[in-house]
Length: 173
Image 1: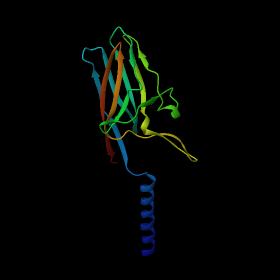
Image 2: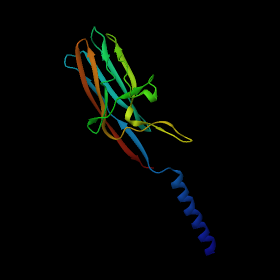
Image 3: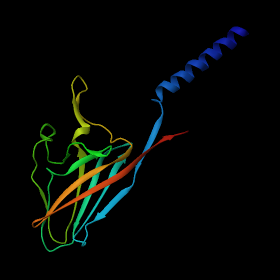
């Protein structure tokens, strides 16, 4: 009788250990606030939020041109902010991974138009080699992160510091 009991207890322990290992460890939910900024005389509205699906790996940047002039978004002066300091630029659709740190042409936002683009911090992208290698987008860390956006309207240069707060919460079953 004690042999059967010990076998049952051993099987339950092995099953419990297997379920812990198979679960992949603790799970987390990431959330982000949206930040909006408008320049002094209402010429342009800029908003940004982190896109979090499992983890946060990109931002959605939206710019509304409220003027009768073109607005130029200077990607070479638009920078990722992490831990209170700038940390490289951004890449987006149309930029080759290997060229992500090279100079980029500006985007133009026409008068009265809204512009949106999904952007990825360059410094959170890396190439890993090996059998399952390739380009990897690492998550934006929890805490305060964002972008320093540089726009030009005619001769005026407008700089916006957009900071979002990403929170990470452990999911309990």
